[in-house]
Length: 96
Ligand code: SF4
Ligand code: SF4
Image (cartoon, rainbow, N blue to C red; front, top):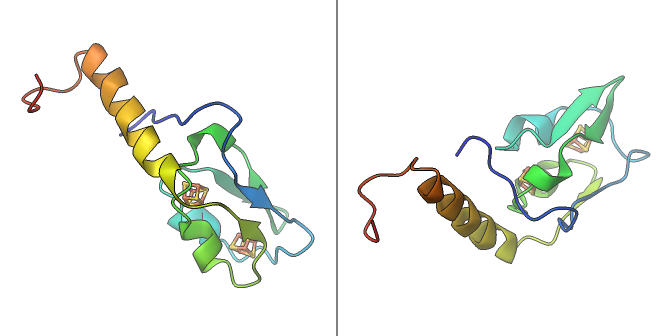
């Protein structure tokens, strides 16, 4: 789902840069390139792409990330599905 967007400025993702040790785990596990590591610190570069899946927080060794994993995934997937369907990007769906 390239171009996936969640709702604007509502993702619960939080990053404590003081705790971050620059291990790259969050950047590696995030499916939507929300993080970038520069100068051995993680940065949130695309908050609105966050699905609140929780993978980054689960893999951070120093608990520098918090996110309320939950409904964001389902809402985001439905929004993306509707957007792609409107754009004609999906074919053969059960509601087509
Ligand atoms: S919660 Fe999931 S989508 Fe959001 S930043 Fe973490 S890994 Fe990426
Ligand atoms: S997983 Fe945690 S410690 Fe590692 S780069 Fe990301 S925020 Fe920093």
